[in-house]
Amino acid sequence: MYYVGAGTSGRLAVLDAAECPPTFGTPPRKVRAVIAGGARALQHAVEGAEDSARNGARDLRRAGVSKLDVVVGLSASGTTPYVLGALDFARRIGAVTVGVTSNPGSPLAKRTRIAIAPDTGPEAVAGSTRLKAGTAQKLVLNLLSTAAMVRLGRVYDNWMVHVALTNQKLRRRGARILQEVAGVTPRAAEHALRQSGHNLPAALVMLKTGATARDAQRWLAKTRGNVRQALEAAENAATYRRKTARTGPILAAPRRRGRPRPR
Image (cartoon, rainbow, N blue to C red; front, side):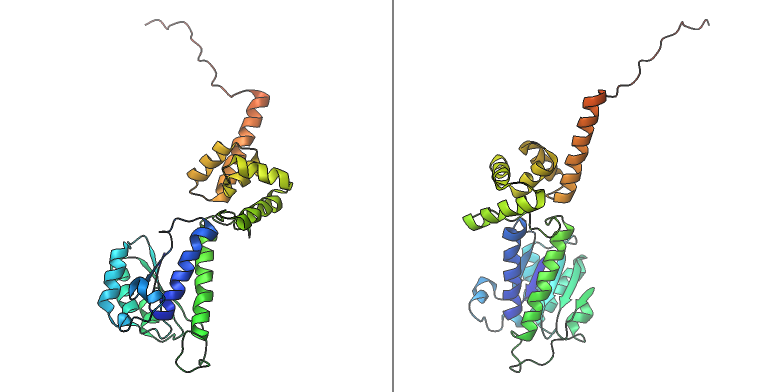
């Protein structure tokens, strides 16, 4: 998923994209942000950067977007040339297009397959769309990225089981998640985390199914990190092992060889 924006919209896009890897354990390329004016525009106003539709298309092409991707254009007014140019390019190559704007009758809303246009009303400071319109955009981005990650199985129930355990606070949080989801003691949760190399999804699969760390990681790899599918696969494998342990493996009956028929 690619976010495209200028000014406040672009900065909000960068913020939401940057939060996805630590929260959902996704590769940095899974959710990306393209902002008019590039990295400099994150801290400084780059005057005129949003006025070129050609640059919007160029930057999106350079980012490597394809017809398999989703492109989300953000513009409070729905008229930003940079964003419109990027969306026109996305449409030409067959990508799914989404527009987020506070102006439902704008060119952006009309040029996208899916238009999301919250009614934010007049700004408290006239013309300052970083206020109500910007807040609404942030909420919409939260919804889009979170819903996408739920569909991809990066969330289990309402737990962020793919959170990156990169510091002490997050490691403690990961242990608490395991205790709640798997219904185990703090000691069991810590033991599973150590065995899995502090891989929270693998530790969860281990605790809920009895799988080894290697098998848990194998199931997660096969399901592309979808925790629910990995749990189902591991549980099915465990059930099969229990059945075969009681009855033995099911073998094909040997073929009987009779006397050859006379010709």
